[in-house]
Amino acid sequence: MCDAQFWRNVVFINNFFGLNLIKYCWIPSWYLAVDLQMWVTAPFVMYFYITMRKRKHRPFIFIFLLLVVYIVTYITCWYWDIVEDPYRTPGTKNAIIYYDHYFANPFCRLDIFYIGMAFGCFYKECKLESYPSIEKVKKWYKDDLVRWTHYIVGFFLVNFTMFIIYPI
Image (cartoon, rainbow, N blue to C red; front, side, top):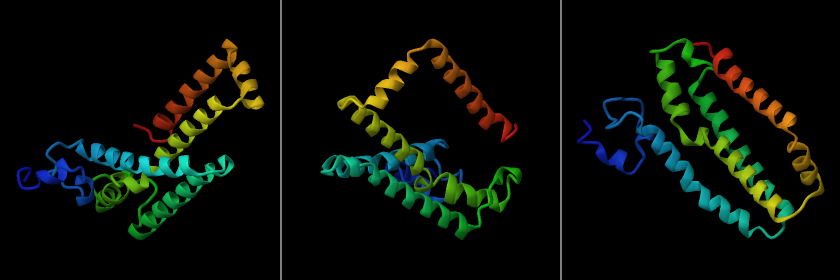
């Protein structure tokens, strides 16, 4: 099957053809396809971000994109009747629908990608201009106790979301 459908993997669109592990030449290739599809949108977003004349209106690009992504995700979940936790019923039709239309769908994953882009743009803007509130945070964050407290809290939050909410 890989010989007949190799072109889907070559052009990184194999994630749009559903969960059929036989179709995948390499099973993790769905992730590469989703990642590439998200990166293809980045130059267009950055073009609109850079060409916007008024800097104070630039964050609205990301707000608009996030609203669109959330609406598309909501409509996808509503249309396919995707439950909140399909992992509780593995191997069922619902889990396959979840994978095909939500998990391997780049439109349902763009929110995190755009949030990362927004923070990157915000960081770049803060480096270009000196904001008094940012300078206060930089001074405050130089304290070792504050920095290590943030590391420890972040470590526990990540582990909490990975292992407590979705137990192994």
